[in-house]
Length: 304
Image 1: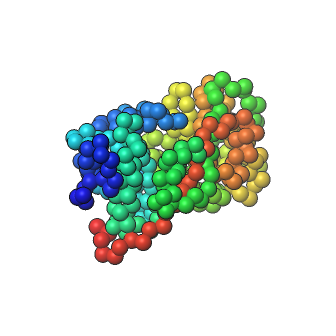
Image 2: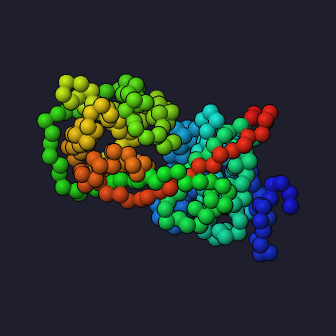
Image 3: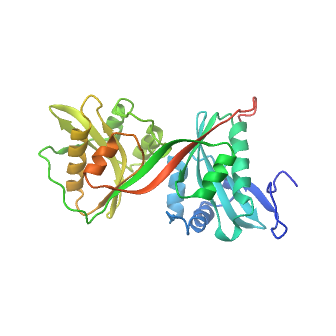
């Protein structure tokens, strides 16, 4: 079988060719991802504009990301984001009518090869706990689980929280990111890494708020969203405080300011102290994910 064909075939399956994701349009990639995730636990509904934003904010490398074709039809995709020697895998999906034919393994195998040739030393990804087929696929490729991640949501119709005496101070996001390294006790996930936040801030997609407590800055949050849901893109709390109290005040004040909107935060490490604050304020865990990591032995001289 040629290098561009799937590594596995069944008699009834046409040849599946693999091409760089940049060879199809952003609209076609959005449609492919929507179709591939339509029956997932967490469906995806992306517009082409949102797909383009993901490319930009997460540093997706379209030349090294992979799309699978059956004939001329895109049927699967795996996206690779690159920062330095680290890579992040997202958007892995195969359309329902083409699953269980080795396409997902072919996509991931090619993506891992591309990452190694690019000189990356590690790949990370997240997979929903209940997604056993995907977890088996990644484990079979050598990915190892590293930590559990929690997605939290406080519904818009939840009971009102007490209004704290302290008020939030609106601050430019870049000013708040100076606290990022010192005010996090866990490594950030790719979607909320400081590089992602800086890119989103430069695009005008974030609002920032600081909480002053006992006469000094004690916590901050960066938010993004629309009229129905507010996403907490980052929450930083000074570890020199007890964390719980300023964190509680920060989120109570935020909930009051955005009354009537759901609040969400994605992929909080399970042992992050922030979880205590979220649970106390009646946020609910809606999704549990496993972060997995693959160490790569990158070939020399091929990191173009």
